[in-house]
Amino acid sequence: MPATPAWPPNSLPRLFVDTELAESDEIAIDAAQANYLVRVLRMKAGAQVKLFDDRTGEWLAELTHIGKRDAVLTVEGQLREREEVPDLWLAFAPIKKARLGWMVEKACELGVRRLIPVRTERTIMGGIKPAKLRAHLIEAAEQCERTALPELAEMTSLDTLLSDWPKQRALFYAAERGGGSFRKALVENDGPAGILVGPEGGFTEEEDAAIRAVEQTAPVSLGPRILRADTAAAAAVSLWMAGRGDWN
Ligand code: SAH
Image 1 (cartoon, rainbow, N blue to C red):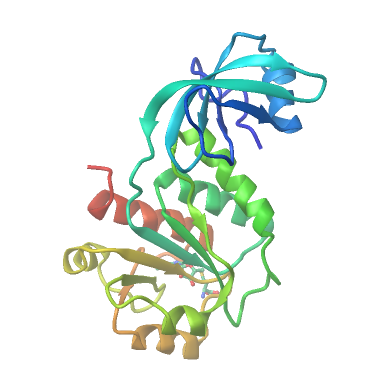
Image 2 (cartoon, rainbow, N blue to C red; image 1 turned 120 degrees about the vertical axis):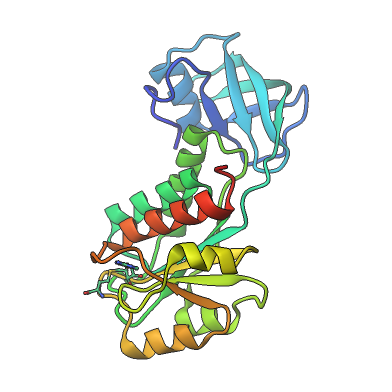
């Protein structure tokens, strides 16, 4: 889905296209994107747009053809290389639709590299709709000027997540009880990392024990209050980004 017209103000519209971009390419955009540029933004032939492809970076393009339901953009020149995204993963249990949408949008804006939906015992949502989540991620990336989309991993079980967790990657486990200092965990773990947040009902005692048994796990507290899963995810990602990401 294209970015909403009011934001960002005074800047060129930005669209993701799922094809590798190069100078002089003619890109036929889909009906939704064409509708957004031509009917929502009332752009005319000759207007400029920014495109990014999650492969090469960001490009300036010109609207060169307007059809009934489609439009063509001609790529003019490269504006930016594809960025290097901080090496942070976010593993989360699917939560209710509106909160999940919010959570993935914020994860994208805050700079997460990879999102991993995890099935846990108390996960109340049956599954995720990957196409919907990806659409959220694309919209967030368009708005926040990312040149790289977050990867969306396939849904996995908690067991598999834990047994496959890479040796060199710290696992910041958001633990509402018995979590240690986030600041201290950041000092002790300066490499690639992932954050694990539970579902609305939290993890079971067995799950909690299994997570803590993983060598790479650092149980971290996000304060004395119980946060909703979406709040916990945004808070933990922010803390990691400020300490180890690209916010400095
Ligand atoms: N188990 C709780 C609710 C879980 S909150 C209950 O039902 O009482 C959802 C998730 O957010 C938790 O699994 C945890 O990962 C995270 N979380 C919430 N508050 C937290 C806090 N203060 N510190 C660390 N993690 C927290």
